[in-house]
Each structure stands twice: as structure tokens, then as C-alpha cells.
Length: 387
Image 1: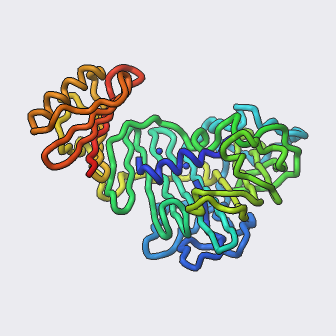
Image 2 (image 1 turned 90 degrees about the vertical axis):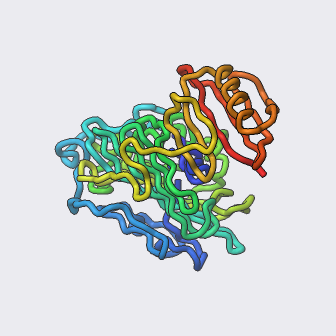
Image 3 (image 1 turned 180 degrees about the vertical axis):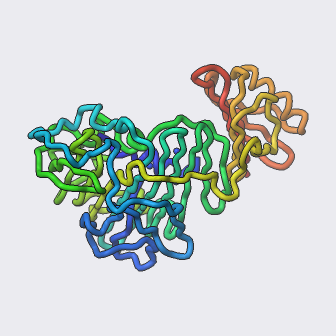
């Protein structure tokens, strides 16, 4: 299994669809709540309603009614009397599937790093997902030296096939095409960081669900995986599986390692803590278009020419992206003609179809047009200026 830090943090870095946590480090400027220098299970936002991060820039997901002990996807998950398997195959793809019959759920992810210096950073993620019709929203709160900076909030929302991305200083990027991918698939990926067979630890109730607990050790960390390579040692590690349905409810790791994403620099070895939770199964959630984002047919405009069939037009801080049904060669000719009409010179070309860039020297700026052939025909186009 691979924790998809790369996917979530690509969102944070590019603002373009997660991963991390409640700060437990010593950074006094960290706006994210903490309850000590470690991440014991009891202090993490994993049971019932989750406390929101505090601070002048922090926001919280919408309040929704929940039960004190939310049930799992099955009708009565806590009555299972089956015998737990002695070992858990971490390489089994079925282990990481979204459970059947699921209508809605919430997800939290907490990831911290602290090293001498002090060097500390954290990311906390909260999400709410409705399965059908599909809608999901994820809020990332960063603290300390984490990649986006201290006291920053990043929001990713997808409703059906439309994505909305909001980050301070960039406004809203909307209209990007999106695959309806559930968070079990996004946050858990087979054949990655975790491998081997985990030993049975005991039975517990986690997030209102009766679970089997299994122990994770360094023997289960794949050093050839990029995420696994950052883990040096584990003092604690558990994976919790629902007794009825065999879906993941929690993954928790505490130990030492490195995290350039959370430290903001090539970091020494420090204390790391990671906890992923799935909870509030089949409880009502409400996912709305973020404030400031266009709704309906409203979309972004482009400063530069776009083909008549341009779709999924987005603008993020002066960078424009869209898709066209024209093939790459036809799109090249379109931009050579249209940019010349704006007074731009003959472009410099780098690369060749199916992927290349055109750089135009225009009267007011240097304009870069990136072209890439789509998987099903057509072309993906990105336009941005450079000094």
C-alpha cells in the first residue's frame, strides 16, 4: 500500500487533485491544534465529529449531524463474530477497495515532522464524500515549514466531473476535468509503501466500527517505494480493518524518518507521525461549490486566443489550461496564425508531437504554449507568460 502523499501534495504545490496532519511539533507559530509532542490515537480527530484547526486563516468543513457512534457501511457491522485471520496480506488489492453499499463518509489525514533546530511542519486534511451522485471536498491545513507555509488553507472540491481548487493568492481554478475517484483509491494504493503479512494484534472499536487490528513494523515498509524510503524506524504501527466488510478504517505510523515536504528543506532524521482515518460512514454530508468559484456554465476567460471548441477552460494565477478536439499539429498551426495576428514573432519550438512547447516573443511578454496529445484524441493546452 502506498500513502498518496505525492497526489495530495501535488495539489498543494500546483494548485491544480491527498497529505498530512495535526501539528504536534514545537513550532509556536503552528495554527493547527495539538495535544502534546506525540500523536497518541486518543488525541487525533478520529472519533465522531472532528475538531477543526484554529487560527485566523483556518476554516472548518461544514457542520453536519452525526451520531455518537456512526455505523459502518453494513447494516450492523459490530455484530460480526467471525474469526480474524492470523495474518493480513498487505499486498492484496481487495484490502484497499471502497466498501460496497457506502453512501457517504469522512476522511482525516494527519502527518507531522519534527527535528532538532527546531524544524517542524505539519499538514492536516479533512474531507467529506458523497458516493452517488459523486461529490467530495478536501481541506488541507498546513503548519510550520510545510510546503505551502504556516497557517495556510488549501481546498479541493469535485462535484460530478467538475473540479474546484481554491488557494489564497490564486483565487479559484474551476472547470478542470476530473475522474470520479473515491478517497479509498486516492489515499490507499496497492503494491506501494506497505508490503508483506501483518500479524493480528487484537479487536477494538475504531471510529464507531468494530475492527481487527494488525501490527506494522519496518518489515512491512518497502524501501524501494518513494514514501517508504523516507521511513527510518517505527516505534508504533497499526492498520485497522472492519470486522464486517474488511475495509480499512485507520492506518497509523509513528517513528523516525525524513520529510522535505514538511521541513521545507533536505531534512535530518526527525520524529514523524502519520494517521489516516475513514469515519462517519453513511452520515449526511453536504458538498458545495466553494465561495468565489463559478457555478453553472460560468467559466474562465483566456487572455490569448483559444479554439472555438475549447473545453474545461481554467485560469490559475495567469496560467490558462483547456482541452480542444483539434490534434496537436492543427493546434500548432492555430497558434502560429493567431499569435502572429497579435504581433508575436515566429515561435521557438521545443520537442515534437505528441508533446511540445511553442515560445512566442510578443510585444508585452514572452508567451509559452504547451501542447500534449490527449489519450482519446485532441490536445491539452497550457498557456503562460514569462518575463
